[in-house]
Length: 372
Ligand SMILES: Nc1ncnc2c1ncn2[C@@H]1O[C@H](COP(=O)(O)OP(=O)(O)OP(=O)(O)O)[C@@H](O)[C@H]1O
Image (cartoon, rainbow, N blue to C red; front, top):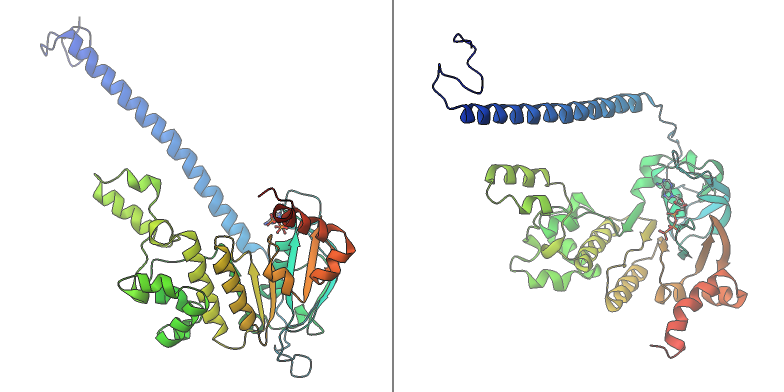
């Protein structure tokens, strides 16, 4: 048996350590080594992921921006009216870039929306409602259509300056974010130049139905919303540094939970949209399911206020609910399988007895068949 430097063995008389202890130490080292190797393997796969993401970023940077800015100022001095934006879709088809489906999300859609109309888009899931909104939000021109043409106030959308179009639109969706700022700032984001104009902020809050919620809070509009706590963070009370690092990482995160439940969040987001309306110059507003978390009374009030402030704006709503909106709409667009299968008013579409009346009757039946 070696008595030199090689002291590892079941029996090590040079160190006088009992063999069982040596074995335990050996096992510990082996375990630590296994842990290190598996961490290394995990980390190296993360490195590959990071490198791939970086590569993709560089590839993206090489992609030429296909959206070419136009030169025509908006509003057009001769064609635009102060009633709002007018739209025309001529044989428009669109498939999402990189989308898995070979089918177009919308197919050969032709329709006209007059300036100042209150328009409601209905249809089953996946029928293309939000896609119509996205290409009409065209206004951002994130999605240029594959074929067909979109006209705004009689001129192809592509001719307009993007920045002018953006200034003229407001958007209200269910997935807008709230930030860990004060309520006033969250609302003021709709019109950042006037974020300190408390009179305007409170006016927007009232229109969005957020006044009661603000009154309940000790600091009113100056209440700062707290960032979201993830499930991960909840286990980390003992590790203060790690917890505060995670919380900082969540700064950009949405606000929800106790500090602001769904319905209240939608009210604040709606208030932000009204703040944007108050900035002036808005001629087109889109609302994509803006009331999904609101109770029926709050939903009615929101629609009323949107309608009341709709002067000088074309309003387009996407909804699954049939009610005040569809009843008052100047134009209902009923989508099915990517096509605008029916257009008209509630009465006209009911009289048709087609897709719209079928969808309507499913909801109406719940109240009329005495099953409730
Ligand atoms: N970002 C996307 N990438 C790829 N395909 C998409 C994308 N968004 C929607 N689609 C597809 O386009 C089609 C139309 O979807 P769209 O969201 O317009 O329908 P929708 O009527 O608004 O549905 P819902 O009522 O469920 O919101 C669907 O087949 C959908 O899967």
